[in-house]
Image (cartoon, rainbow, N blue to C red; front, side, top):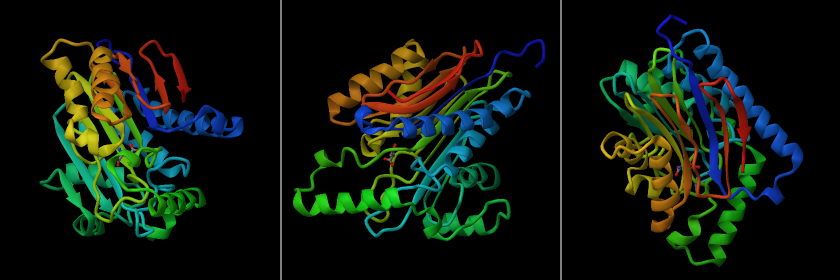
Length: 313
Ligand code: ASP
């Protein structure tokens, strides 16, 4: 650290959703918290050495993508065709640059490809085949067969959803509970720069081609000089309400603290409109906010005072 440096801050999430305390065994809770802790350490290793917030959020998200308990990378949910389509985005608050991918099927760590879109293309968002073809040009982006993302738990969730669909009328109201386990990270590095990253398999039984909020800058991810935000929840609502940017805008133009802004959007506005979910946010002073309107949100943080913890409910 230099004499002008400030303490780094890191927050991560492993998704908000219907997580009932009674249904989560102690062993599962321990395992999830251990995964969150490991992801925090991946980011911390970079930040503690004076590395950038951008590198740290990417590293934390890569770690979470590798853990099959989360709905991102390995362990992603299935779409209605029984395949995996992955979305991710990343934003560097220090310069306002961003990169994203949607509907990729063979990229082991979509967040790495999102960063490559930001750094090695003239674009912000590449989708499906075009994104895969771009990945073909990048030896550092590892590829896998779509079946590599398979897990029994997600297969069972798909079967359950499809059985439910056959017996219940499909309306917007019963999409709740189809998401669970999207991952994200926000950080402030010792130079005071902010960054955010988010990665997901989307919603179980989603239509082929459906894109959620996660790869949409301003909806699922946002970072500027004042605030960095990563969201999780029922994506359609996050898109319609530009949730990640709305939180930042309330700070920038409305004079709200990051805690007030995140709370207003996530716990007041979204539920009023019928959506739900959560977000993690950090501001330039190093304050962290982690509100959610669901029964739980997997999360972990390292505060400016060095305190570190994980939580679910
Ligand atoms: N927001 C994600 C989506 O709609 C899902 C999630 O956060 O779990 O694709």
